Image 1 (tube, rainbow, N blue to C red):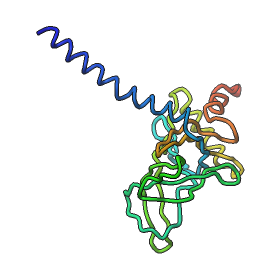
Image 2 (cartoon, rainbow, N blue to C red; image 1 turned 60 degrees about the vertical axis):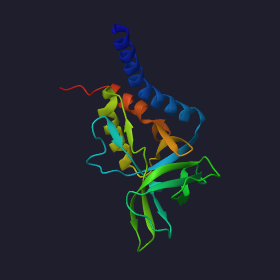
Image 3 (cartoon, rainbow, N blue to C red; image 1 turned 45 degrees about the horizontal axis):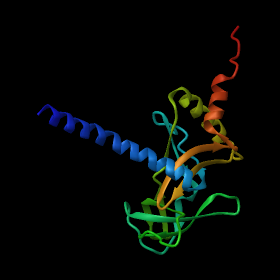
Image 4 (tube, helix red, strand yellow; image 1 turned 90 degrees about the vertical axis):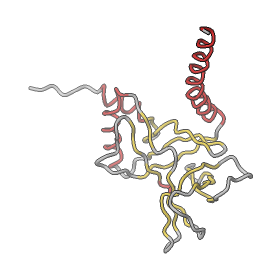
Length: 192
């Protein structure tokens, strides 16, 4: 009877490790085998870009004009390509998974405006988590650089077969973590 309990316990332990292990493996596979797209970041609410230890991200290419009627909450397959500057752009939306390309992401319709035939998409990678020690410096750097209209900001997302993984937030060709560490470690003014 004791062996039976040990067997059940072992199965439960293995099951608890299987789910997160599978998620990590899928993310690593996407990063290694997926195509990297640069999604240009749109301004976020300046009073609340951070929620806890992540940055809330908005993307420029979350709007698309289409005559197809959509309903809030619909699943949508967003087919992507690169524009002339190397940033991701939407080339088509579909309610069914495309079979002619791997360069698409499964997303959700946030809203549809029939009067101007515009659909707004919510991507599954709208949060970028940071380690605790650089969260506040990253918030400050993000706010300062986003005020400058010349700042080039984008999320680097690896995409394959409808899934995507956000691997970096880049501001002026530098990862936000690097900029945050510099801000955190800068010499402090001497108080008199």
